[in-house]
Length: 526
Image 1 (cartoon, helix red, strand yellow):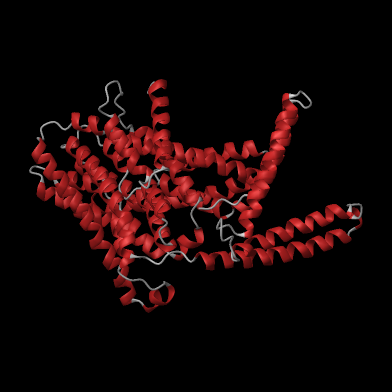
Image 2: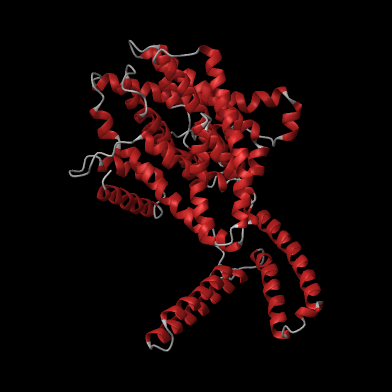
């Protein structure tokens, strides 16, 4: 791809994603719609998805950032429903959608139909994370959707390889397919387990934040490439490494964490925006290659496959939710009680995305009905993103799910901070009694106590009364006044620089100090 179209794609995607933040419409939907419209604007180049770019270059960082931000403990606590969806559902959907397409399309063989089923079986990691984040779903539902989307690509890609081998006449049979699946899954997890500890040790030993962040950007590509090199699942390798590093991120120094969070926010924002815009931009490419299928037949096939995808998910989700609970008392005791509302949301939240399209574009030209596979994949991706994405928010509101207990969360945070502050206070007393610290002036020791007390009280103040006029708590007022004071200092520093009383290097040092103080005073809401 030439530089100018690539820059235009990134800039346009970022602009639309920024606009989406000012609207109630989730960014993925607005980006897809913008891509659909832009595809027919004169002068816009044809952005055909290249699977050799999407799978090894776009998928690893997107998976990595989603997995690092996930909770290993929450995923482990919900391992059973996640496995039922990420493995069981993907294989079930592959069979259901495949045989539905086989029955529907004249001349379509079973192996080719199963290729289609495997391609559109996995819900998308980026779509699930973006939609769940926007809608503020209950924690357990969000964890299950994110966990499913982190692992299911590996299942789908393996199922696709097995079906494709059968479609081109080189299948090793069911035994060979099972062996390949085990190699991909066990091998991917194994590669991740081998890499995660050395990578973490390297991260903790590097003392330069820039080097640590450079390493952080390389990690997903290294894990993915290492696993694919041995014909294992690069997806699972990336997820295993990311979960381990995210769980132990506290062991990395604060400067690295601050930089890393900012860097990965930018990377995730740009990649997610580009990915969803690219989905919409595929329409001219897909329609151009549709070939012998006329409009009415193609439309009927698209609607039928979309319905098969939606129905198959509900056919799996409800039994997978309730049957194990009916059978096993242990599951009933270990997992929280649930009703019919949660599986309805999980069933309706199965949006497909760029991975399905990338796999579809990787289908060899020699496979019969390749153009139809690509078209049906595209229409299913668009259908799930638009239909399910637009209706999911009103569905959640209609079901009246219990909102997050903000008061309970704040109380737990306050109690945790109180325990930590007591430990810090005891440690401060010990340190001040040591001879090497005896020269610390009393005002500085008092400042340490004041900062510690401020941290302890800040969370409790959020539980207290609010200003009847502004709705601010004492903590809100404190942070607002602190920012106003810092802004006043910042203006003075700039004025002194303009008067040539300090140079730019000193200005940057002073502004950085203020930035860190403002970051400490400011608590981002939502």
